[in-house]
Length: 263
Image (cartoon, rainbow, N blue to C red):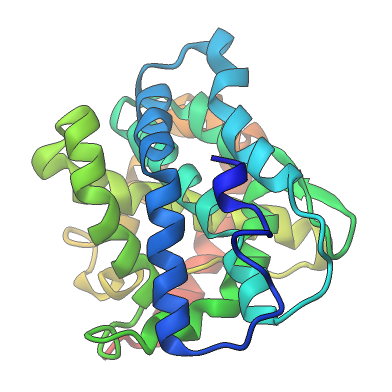
């Protein structure tokens, strides 16, 4: 997998076109398909002593980055396989309610070759891959989507996780919950740095206006309030292990979602 996604195979200095972008997506997906399924199995079944196995693939992929310069789009897209692994393992972990596995993936220290800083995976990958968000919206059939990359990954991973775990009708709810946890953990980590409360909105964002009983976001926050310090993601160590911190971030992020007016 590492050699199949190396910079020799995916050089960062080539010119950009939408066709080349789509071709690279598909080649990255082909190179990581079996690892994506393995990551799902580890996320779903992994016990604490499987931690190294769960994080070895994204760690190895990030460790191969050597070139700090090149076309920004290609530099950003090389983080795409790591994003797929975090989604696959994270969605599977959510479905099994193994939130310690979600924490291990999102908080895995990753070095950014451009800044040379080591930050949690959720922070590093989000910062880099957001540079190609607009390219996903240019893909055929994606111009009408509010969150084109989220929609693309949703459709891409559904058959892979169904093959590995037979999630069936549970897939969408698990996908939304993972993206909410991802966005809010990013907001938590980022606000430590600059006081901001932004996180990458996924498919759950445009569902926000469904209100208290139809929005995945509202339902998750309601569950957290009801469970308090016994809420599993907090007990697993997300949001600094603090329900108060989670609610602070969730309330601020809710204000951000309300301002977006998805129409």
